[in-house]
Length: 421
Image (tube, rainbow, N blue to C red; front, side, top):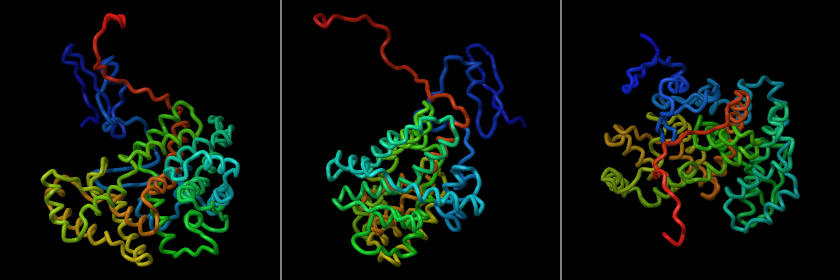
């Protein structure tokens, strides 16, 4: 059986056979037969805009792998910075590479003090942390003008290190500014998740972090490190295709993530659990969703048509967190909701399984994060993925993004002077 498709133009009777390669067909071959005829694909749901060797996502079978490594193994055995190295460089580091990478990241955590102060002074005291973070990332390009030398791999790598290193510092600064607390400088003697949590929460004396919370933060960052061609990653690649510097490209990704349809799902889960109110109201809520009177947040996914592999990992981590913080009062509601949905053919037949957002919000809230910080946490974890795609796009010498459209406006018409309208 030939691995190909045959397309026939019924207007002319002409046909063309196009091979299927890596699950896709070449649009350039389509254009040979049908010049000026475009696919209509709102949301680009069935369009592969690029080849990529970074992340494999098989939604039908619930598979997520970074550079071939199953997410389950990475979450159990790896660290976030090791995963960041893997995403950026394509292979897990050996000991020497690992130590050098950690050293580089650790010693680029500081941000210029003049820059930090001016950013804070420019924003209202209760500015949303994600808005401040997005602006700060874009502003970093003015401090590193050499970042515009995107053709130089050495310069690109320097900026990748800087961005991964500085994101927790920028994020913690955004939070501290929003609550009127003094900035906490990075501590280069502790690991990446601990340093971030210390910059978030330290007040006065030494900061002590329970290992379970450090591990949960590590896992959450790993699970969010990349997720193929989602909205924010596509934004980074599109902006990068114009040969923008990495700070501008990552700022564009942050802006995409700021939108509630992309980065706000775990907050929506908490709001849903609050609306349900109590354990006893779950069954009635399930029936209302089936009647079309509400939405089941945190279930189903644009890509996954099976159980989100990240959801199982994060659910297990949640129990470890609650052992330290105390059980989140919403947990019993969430567990009953999950059980009810997974045993109801209405949801199973529609492949509405829990996704990573169903439990991540509960963990973040139990650790003390306000809901406006959820997308900021997402951005810290996703930065290595954004940068890996930006870098891969440049190595591919990709063309500048320029989609087509199907024009649906009025036909040609003549201008009418204002007095005659």
